[in-house]
Image (cartoon, rainbow, N blue to C red; front, side, top):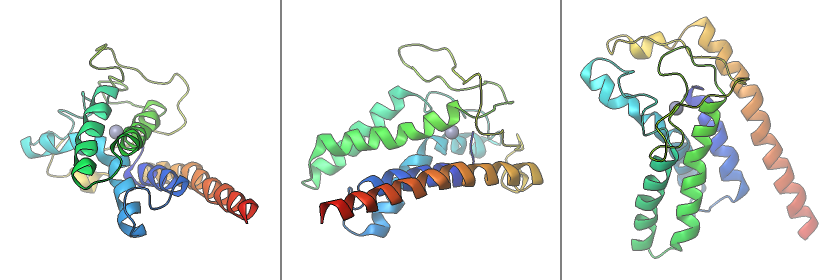
Length: 184
Ligand SMILES: [Zn+2]
């Protein structure tokens, strides 16, 4: 699993494709993209409450089925706010799925390896044979889970994520500016 910084940069890259897509206020909009891009890792929370953070991590909340369910819930929210539902539900699905894609390409040394990408159609776990991101070292205990994330190994993992996904974000910004210039 990449760190939240990697997923946040991926979310911001998605946000730059169509700034103001969800909310007119660009800060709310960017925050919502970052929230969606990190949302699958909310599956740490029940485990943290029970004292074992990894208990439900990389379970069914890391799947296309969960992405569809979250898109349906988000679509309902935007329906009640009078927005176009389908395009927003599709965007929610894609940004949530950006998380699954990054996790798929991350080295995973904690069982279960990879993620149940196609749940509920298939229960098997998927992981890329050639990872792009390195693994994150973390404690399996709730009491030192957050503090355990701050170590030299994870700092170099974060550095790699910033380089790759920060580069992707910069590329999206540059392409969007170039396209904007062409329109004028
Ligand atoms: Zn994840």
